[in-house]
Image (tube, rainbow, N blue to C red):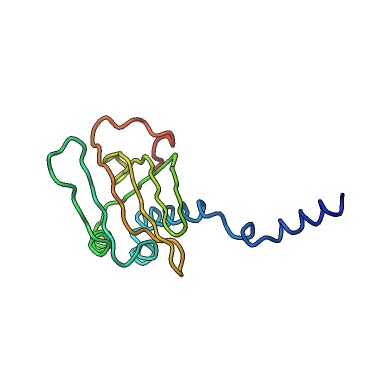
Amino acid sequence: MHRSLLLCLLLTAASPSLAQPDAKSEVLAVLDRFFAAMTARDTVAMGRTLTPVGTLHAVVPGSSKAPRATTHAEYLEHLADGKESLLERYWDPIVRIDEAIATVTTPYDFHVDGQLSHCGTDVFTLVKGPDGWRISGVAYTMQREGCPPSPLGPVRP
């Protein structure tokens, strides 16, 4: 009995599925790299988190305007041209993964030059290719007033 239990444990430990990194952690690591690249205004690092073709959609709650769409290429240009310091923080992400596609929905706050600019909800769509997970699209709300305090606390200078 003990030998069969030991054999079962050894086979489980050697299983390839257990040896692979956790997919949820991989997906969230892409978001972390995306936001770190944004803060650093590092378009090369940012480009590594994005698919070559994709779109970001900004939605202003209560606005009658259509969502503003920006291609990945346009976003990288804007990031390179800007001078302000940017910081986006997220918390409580909900991650769903089905094979090689994933979505992440999360509340966030966005700071420009150390001041709260807006808050809202981010929805990321990611796809997994030969080089790993990449962001294929983002949709987010931009709430400029009435942002609840972040559970992450105030931004530190």
